Each structure stands twice: as C-alpha cells, then as structure tokens.
Length: 159
Image (cartoon, rainbow, N blue to C red; front, side, top):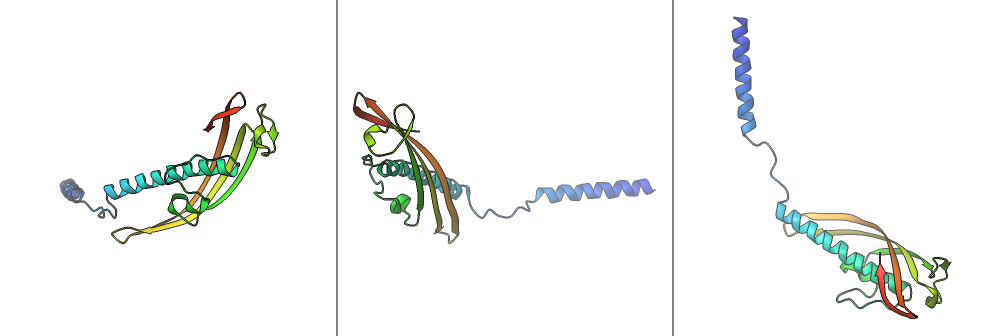
C-alpha cells in the first residue's frame, strides 16, 4: 500500500514539475536585442574614432604635420564629441639605428613610441528614459614609423 501511495505522489510531483516548466517565469527583457546591437555598434564606432583621433594627435604632439581627417578634432578637448576627455601622453623617440634620441631635431627621428592614457566619465539618456553611464579608461601604445626614401619622408605607419 505504501509503495502505491509513494508511486502516486512521485507521479503527481513529476506532472506538477512538467507543468511548471512549461510556463516561463523569466522576467521580461529590460532591453531588446536591437537596442543592444545598436549600442555595441555605436561604442565600437566611438572606439575607432578615438583611436584614429589619438594617432593623429600623437603626430601633432611629436611636432609632425598631422594628416587632415574629415571631422577629426583639432585638439584633445573635442575627441569623439566629448569635452571632458583627459589625456596623459608620453613619447620616446628613436633614430634609424634604434637608439633613443631627443625628439628635437625631428630630422634625426625615425620612430616615435607614444603611450597615451584617456580618462572620462560618460552618461546619456536613451529615448525610453533609461540612463546609461560609464567610465572611459583607455591605455594605448602607438608606434609611429617615419618611412623615408633617401632624405625625404614618404609615409608614416602606425602600429
């Protein structure tokens, strides 16, 4: 008798368990996939813009004529549309033999290694009223190679 009662209880518990699993108890998503994808794409685009801008500004900080980029900021205060980005930049210059040299005169410099740190706090409000905020902390190392043909600089390569 006990074994039948235990069997019935086990079958009832199993049936209740299956019924409970068929209903979703997960909370509704607070953010949809389209919003998330757009946010990731926007963040990636901002990161690329900051990288290109940083390389351009590294050339200016090395007293080189920086290339003109459409929409590129002319100073660090305007990077990626933000006025509060704080840059800390250091550079080391090398001659054609790889020996560390003073960055002036520039005629002796063939490679410039720049270490850049960026700091900022960003926030924004989405159309649905959600507030997003975060700290921007980036460290970048940029090695600029000045490429020469004879005595003339013909191009620059960033690594």
